[in-house]
Amino acid sequence: MRMERVSGLLSWTLSRVLWLSGLFERGAARQPRIMEEKALEVYDLIRTIRDPEKPNTLEELEVVTESSVEVQEINEEDYLVIIRFTPTVPHCSLATLIGLCLRVKLQRCLPFKHKLEIYISEGTHSTEEDINKQINDKERVAAAMENPNLREIVEQCVLEPD
Image 1 (cartoon, rainbow, N blue to C red):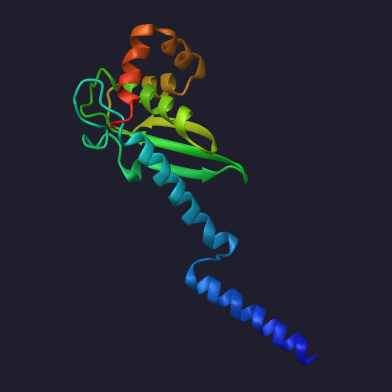
Image 2: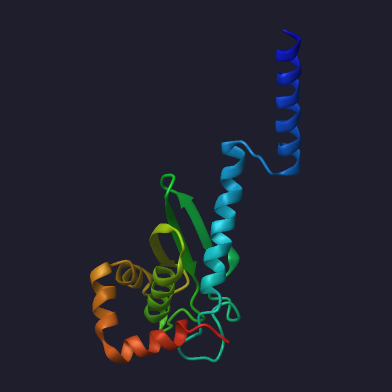
């Protein structure tokens, strides 16, 4: 009886120490932190994408920010990644191309299984609905990437800086 008490107390103490040190968190408490880490991982990949027209990155132009990335768990192995980007002007002619660059970079570089949804931030572009449909349509994206001129522009934009 005494040994069971000591063992139980030791187990409780150990789990409490680990919990307080942040090394062990219960499932529900751990979940938001994991999603935040995955969102930062996504942001780190997209922030360095270059704007097709300007010599700046999407981060520098505030087309993407940390808060524009959301990650949700679909199941234990799959995640939903949602990106909302803001074109520099409401009539930006390259918004579709920026969305394509985001999609290509993440499809190539994300180290976890994911479903990707990319949207223009609501109210920031004159044709946001049409563009949202285009950049989330797999067939249109594949057709766009078959165009050698478009593919070259995308490659230049997603190229990692030295």
